[in-house]
Image (cartoon, rainbow, N blue to C red; front, top):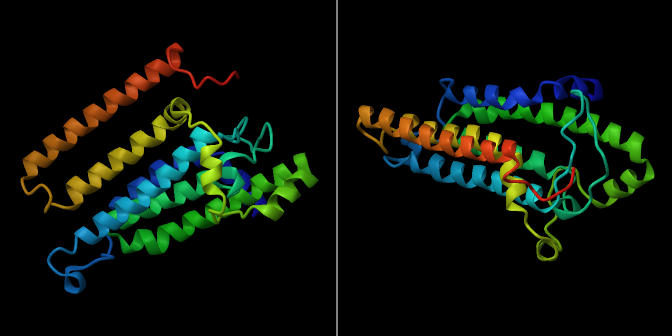
Length: 243
Protein backbone atom coordinates (compact mmCIF):
# COMPACT_ATOMS: atom_id res chain seq x y z
CA UNK A 1 0.00 0.00 0.00
CA UNK A 2 2.87 2.36 0.79
CA UNK A 3 4.43 1.71 -2.63
CA UNK A 4 1.05 2.29 -4.30
CA UNK A 5 0.60 5.50 -2.32
CA UNK A 6 4.02 6.82 -3.31
CA UNK A 7 3.28 6.08 -6.97
CA UNK A 8 -0.17 7.71 -6.95
CA UNK A 9 1.19 10.72 -5.04
CA UNK A 10 3.11 11.80 -8.15
CA UNK A 11 -0.10 12.21 -10.16
CA UNK A 12 -2.59 13.22 -7.45
CA UNK A 13 -2.98 16.78 -8.80
CA UNK A 14 -4.57 15.45 -12.00
CA UNK A 15 -6.83 13.08 -10.10
CA UNK A 16 -9.60 15.55 -9.33
CA UNK A 17 -10.15 16.64 -12.93
CA UNK A 18 -10.56 13.00 -13.96
CA UNK A 19 -12.92 12.33 -11.05
CA UNK A 20 -15.05 15.34 -11.97
CA UNK A 21 -15.37 14.09 -15.55
CA UNK A 22 -16.71 10.78 -14.22
CA UNK A 23 -19.66 12.70 -12.77
CA UNK A 24 -21.14 12.92 -16.26
CA UNK A 25 -20.94 9.19 -17.01
CA UNK A 26 -24.50 7.82 -17.51
CA UNK A 27 -25.67 6.04 -14.37
CA UNK A 28 -28.78 4.74 -12.59
CA UNK A 29 -30.22 7.34 -10.22
CA UNK A 30 -29.68 7.47 -6.48
CA UNK A 31 -32.99 9.29 -6.12
CA UNK A 32 -35.56 8.20 -8.72
CA UNK A 33 -39.01 9.71 -9.27
CA UNK A 34 -40.59 6.28 -8.77
CA UNK A 35 -39.52 6.34 -5.11
CA UNK A 36 -39.26 10.05 -4.30
CA UNK A 37 -42.03 11.54 -6.38
CA UNK A 38 -42.25 14.42 -8.83
CA UNK A 39 -39.82 16.61 -6.86
CA UNK A 40 -37.23 13.80 -6.60
CA UNK A 41 -34.47 16.08 -7.90
CA UNK A 42 -34.62 18.24 -4.77
CA UNK A 43 -33.16 15.40 -2.70
CA UNK A 44 -29.82 15.05 -4.55
CA UNK A 45 -29.53 18.83 -4.96
CA UNK A 46 -30.05 19.71 -1.30
CA UNK A 47 -28.19 16.73 0.16
CA UNK A 48 -25.35 16.94 -2.36
CA UNK A 49 -24.78 20.67 -1.80
CA UNK A 50 -24.81 20.24 1.98
CA UNK A 51 -22.20 17.47 1.83
CA UNK A 52 -19.89 19.11 -0.71
CA UNK A 53 -19.99 22.51 0.99
CA UNK A 54 -19.25 20.84 4.32
CA UNK A 55 -16.11 19.41 2.71
CA UNK A 56 -14.93 22.81 1.47
CA UNK A 57 -15.67 24.38 4.86
CA UNK A 58 -13.44 21.77 6.49
CA UNK A 59 -10.70 22.45 3.95
CA UNK A 60 -11.09 26.21 4.32
CA UNK A 61 -10.90 26.17 8.11
CA UNK A 62 -7.92 23.81 8.03
CA UNK A 63 -5.95 25.97 5.58
CA UNK A 64 -6.95 29.24 7.22
CA UNK A 65 -6.00 28.17 10.75
CA UNK A 66 -2.88 26.05 10.33
CA UNK A 67 -1.80 25.10 6.85
CA UNK A 68 0.34 21.98 6.53
CA UNK A 69 3.14 22.08 3.97
CA UNK A 70 2.81 18.51 2.84
CA UNK A 71 2.17 19.00 -0.84
CA UNK A 72 5.26 17.06 -1.73
CA UNK A 73 8.65 17.93 -3.12
CA UNK A 74 9.90 16.71 -6.50
CA UNK A 75 6.66 14.68 -6.74
CA UNK A 76 7.52 12.79 -3.55
CA UNK A 77 5.98 12.84 -0.08
CA UNK A 78 7.56 15.62 1.95
CA UNK A 79 6.92 17.58 5.16
CA UNK A 80 8.88 20.43 6.71
CA UNK A 81 7.48 19.93 10.21
CA UNK A 82 4.86 17.98 12.09
CA UNK A 83 1.79 20.21 12.25
CA UNK A 84 -0.48 19.41 15.20
CA UNK A 85 -2.29 22.71 15.76
CA UNK A 86 -5.55 24.00 14.30
CA UNK A 87 -7.85 21.32 12.90
CA UNK A 88 -4.89 18.91 12.99
CA UNK A 89 -5.52 18.72 16.74
CA UNK A 90 -8.80 16.98 15.92
CA UNK A 91 -7.99 14.91 12.81
CA UNK A 92 -4.73 13.82 11.19
CA UNK A 93 -5.99 14.33 7.63
CA UNK A 94 -8.67 17.05 7.64
CA UNK A 95 -7.79 18.22 4.12
CA UNK A 96 -8.35 14.73 2.77
CA UNK A 97 -11.59 14.40 4.75
CA UNK A 98 -12.68 17.66 3.12
CA UNK A 99 -11.77 16.31 -0.32
CA UNK A 100 -13.73 13.11 0.28
CA UNK A 101 -16.84 15.04 1.35
CA UNK A 102 -16.50 17.44 -1.59
CA UNK A 103 -16.42 14.56 -4.09
CA UNK A 104 -19.11 12.54 -2.32
CA UNK A 105 -21.30 15.65 -2.33
CA UNK A 106 -20.96 16.27 -6.06
CA UNK A 107 -21.55 12.56 -6.65
CA UNK A 108 -24.84 12.83 -4.77
CA UNK A 109 -25.57 16.10 -6.59
CA UNK A 110 -25.06 14.25 -9.88
CA UNK A 111 -27.62 11.71 -8.63
CA UNK A 112 -25.20 9.02 -9.79
CA UNK A 113 -25.38 5.57 -8.23
CA UNK A 114 -22.23 4.50 -10.08
CA UNK A 115 -20.25 7.45 -8.75
CA UNK A 116 -21.29 6.93 -5.14
CA UNK A 117 -21.13 3.11 -5.16
CA UNK A 118 -18.12 2.52 -7.45
CA UNK A 119 -16.00 5.64 -7.96
CA UNK A 120 -16.01 6.75 -4.32
CA UNK A 121 -14.75 3.40 -2.93
CA UNK A 122 -11.91 3.46 -5.49
CA UNK A 123 -11.13 7.03 -4.46
CA UNK A 124 -11.09 6.01 -0.77
CA UNK A 125 -8.65 3.20 -1.56
CA UNK A 126 -6.39 5.67 -3.37
CA UNK A 127 -6.47 8.10 -0.44
CA UNK A 128 -5.80 5.34 2.08
CA UNK A 129 -2.69 4.36 0.09
CA UNK A 130 -1.49 7.98 -0.10
CA UNK A 131 -2.05 8.50 3.63
CA UNK A 132 -0.13 5.34 4.50
CA UNK A 133 2.76 6.54 2.33
CA UNK A 134 2.72 9.94 4.03
CA UNK A 135 2.54 8.38 7.49
CA UNK A 136 5.48 6.15 6.66
CA UNK A 137 7.50 9.26 5.73
CA UNK A 138 6.41 11.15 8.85
CA UNK A 139 7.15 8.23 11.15
CA UNK A 140 10.64 7.84 9.69
CA UNK A 141 11.29 11.59 10.03
CA UNK A 142 9.66 12.43 13.36
CA UNK A 143 9.70 9.05 15.09
CA UNK A 144 8.22 8.98 18.60
CA UNK A 145 6.78 12.48 18.18
CA UNK A 146 4.60 11.28 15.32
CA UNK A 147 3.63 8.07 17.15
CA UNK A 148 2.51 10.12 20.15
CA UNK A 149 0.45 12.33 17.86
CA UNK A 150 -1.18 9.30 16.22
CA UNK A 151 -2.08 7.86 19.62
CA UNK A 152 -4.14 10.98 20.41
CA UNK A 153 -5.61 11.96 17.03
CA UNK A 154 -7.65 9.78 14.66
CA UNK A 155 -6.56 9.33 11.05
CA UNK A 156 -9.98 10.05 9.49
CA UNK A 157 -12.61 10.86 12.09
CA UNK A 158 -12.83 14.45 13.33
CA UNK A 159 -13.03 14.72 17.12
CA UNK A 160 -15.16 17.78 17.87
CA UNK A 161 -14.25 17.80 21.56
CA UNK A 162 -12.59 21.15 22.29
CA UNK A 163 -13.29 22.32 18.74
CA UNK A 164 -14.65 25.71 19.85
CA UNK A 165 -11.55 26.46 21.91
CA UNK A 166 -9.38 25.64 18.89
CA UNK A 167 -11.32 28.10 16.75
CA UNK A 168 -11.32 30.78 19.44
CA UNK A 169 -7.61 30.50 20.04
CA UNK A 170 -6.51 31.01 16.44
CA UNK A 171 -6.85 33.63 13.70
CA UNK A 172 -8.44 32.62 10.39
CA UNK A 173 -6.18 33.70 7.52
CA UNK A 174 -8.64 34.14 4.64
CA UNK A 175 -5.88 35.31 2.30
CA UNK A 176 -4.03 32.04 2.75
CA UNK A 177 -7.27 30.16 2.09
CA UNK A 178 -7.82 32.03 -1.20
CA UNK A 179 -4.20 31.79 -2.34
CA UNK A 180 -3.91 28.06 -1.60
CA UNK A 181 -7.42 27.07 -2.68
CA UNK A 182 -8.33 29.13 -5.75
CA UNK A 183 -7.45 26.36 -8.22
CA UNK A 184 -9.57 23.83 -6.35
CA UNK A 185 -12.43 26.32 -5.96
CA UNK A 186 -12.55 27.02 -9.70
CA UNK A 187 -12.84 23.36 -10.75
CA UNK A 188 -15.24 22.58 -7.90
CA UNK A 189 -17.61 25.48 -8.55
CA UNK A 190 -17.67 24.97 -12.32
CA UNK A 191 -18.51 21.30 -11.69
CA UNK A 192 -21.34 22.22 -9.32
CA UNK A 193 -22.88 24.76 -11.70
CA UNK A 194 -22.53 22.39 -14.67
CA UNK A 195 -24.44 19.70 -12.77
CA UNK A 196 -27.16 22.08 -11.59
CA UNK A 197 -27.69 23.58 -15.02
CA UNK A 198 -27.36 20.58 -17.33
CA UNK A 199 -28.34 17.70 -15.04
CA UNK A 200 -31.56 19.30 -13.87
CA UNK A 201 -33.59 20.86 -16.70
CA UNK A 202 -36.31 21.47 -14.08
CA UNK A 203 -34.24 24.40 -12.82
CA UNK A 204 -33.71 26.01 -16.25
CA UNK A 205 -36.31 24.64 -18.71
CA UNK A 206 -35.06 26.67 -21.71
CA UNK A 207 -32.01 24.92 -23.22
CA UNK A 208 -30.68 28.12 -24.79
CA UNK A 209 -30.85 29.91 -21.46
CA UNK A 210 -28.90 27.05 -19.89
CA UNK A 211 -25.96 27.54 -22.24
CA UNK A 212 -26.01 31.33 -21.81
CA UNK A 213 -26.25 31.06 -18.02
CA UNK A 214 -23.40 28.55 -17.82
CA UNK A 215 -21.27 30.72 -20.11
CA UNK A 216 -21.83 33.76 -17.88
CA UNK A 217 -20.97 31.76 -14.76
CA UNK A 218 -17.76 30.41 -16.32
CA UNK A 219 -16.73 33.93 -17.39
CA UNK A 220 -17.39 35.35 -13.90
CA UNK A 221 -15.56 32.50 -12.15
CA UNK A 222 -12.72 32.73 -14.66
CA UNK A 223 -12.39 36.48 -14.05
CA UNK A 224 -12.30 35.94 -10.28
CA UNK A 225 -9.73 33.17 -10.72
CA UNK A 226 -7.59 35.38 -12.96
CA UNK A 227 -7.76 38.28 -10.49
CA UNK A 228 -6.68 36.15 -7.53
CA UNK A 229 -3.91 34.60 -9.60
CA UNK A 230 -2.75 38.08 -10.61
CA UNK A 231 -2.71 39.22 -6.97
CA UNK A 232 -0.70 36.16 -6.01
CA UNK A 233 1.85 36.30 -8.83
CA UNK A 234 2.31 40.08 -8.49
CA UNK A 235 2.80 39.82 -4.73
CA UNK A 236 -0.09 42.21 -4.08
CA UNK A 237 -1.75 39.55 -1.94
CA UNK A 238 0.24 37.36 0.42
CA UNK A 239 -0.73 35.17 3.32
CA UNK A 240 1.55 37.14 5.62
CA UNK A 241 3.71 34.09 6.37
CA UNK A 242 7.40 34.36 5.58
CA UNK A 243 8.61 31.56 3.27
